[in-house]
Length: 473
Image (tube, rainbow, N blue to C red; front, side, top):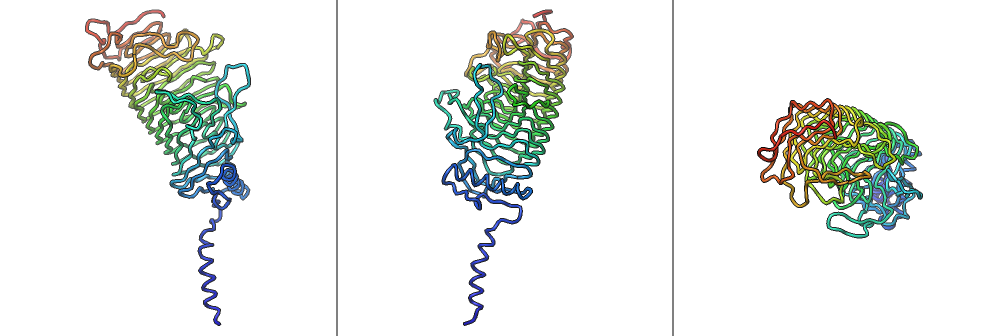
């Protein structure tokens, strides 16, 4: 009998087997036992692929297209790229006990132990790491909801972060989606040289504390072309007190070309700033259907300085008071968190070419002189329209010891206790049927060095003063 048919048969069997083998430097989680049949097994399979890749000196760990896995914690390693194929899903476990890496919340004033939150995707002191798309990492947020309310959920005590990168360097995050976070979605804690490009962060608008991107004690971070929808702040820069020893400044941050929707603030610097936040550019973004547009907020002893917001389109409206904000397009706030807090300084902040349609005006507020100085508004147009579902006529000063939501009239620019504020080529206009608490284009008190010569705008009601400038608070 000829051996040719036998050899041809062997070749037919070997070709698919060879085609299934991963090329050098590529590690498929399926090859390491990921089946979608159990949290522990699938977590171990992904970790096995990551560890093997790192042991070889680096490469790519692939979650194949269409693969759907539920996992506890996976830990990224240096020189490893985690690639999520199209249609793939890594979903966090519904059981907090399944997580093996933890991170603290940003602030705690309770005398007892700090509750540590689990993490789904974690890295610590890793260099040259990447997570790329177009697949999805899901926080399984509804598993941690104890009560569904009309405007905000009530959640259980321990909820996982979706992703925490701690003290990592040379990081690339590109194209993938982060969805349904149970707590903060993506936290950069003490990282340096990070690119976040074309991410989609899709959070539940009723989920508390589900910040989109928290840049915390991190430097040289570029965020570009991302779409973020969250209940809590979309992008937040911090130097949080509970930092596990991390102490580098939050500096050299560029945020461009993002579209943001939130029940809180689109882009916020602070308020939990225990160290310096500086050298920040936010430009070319659209913030819509949000409770607050952009904000610089200081409640602790840090310093926030050298900040530029430019070329933004902002639309805000007032939501339920469980969410911080009162429809302001812009807020600059310096107010101690507690009566024992020694407050730092906000200085050299510029707002240039902002178009705002909102249910409240811009606010610059320092509880005491000396904590806000050098605020510039250039080419800022503010159109204030009558609130819809929720009541206006209040400002939001949280977090604070005093009246957190005081009744205060709505003005185009409301300034208190800030030095060297300038308005150049700015305007205030009012929508139809303004309520009685809509008042002035400018209401200022205790603002030495105020230059309002570049403001155009009338009062909300005929015969009222367009400008009300008082010497002291």
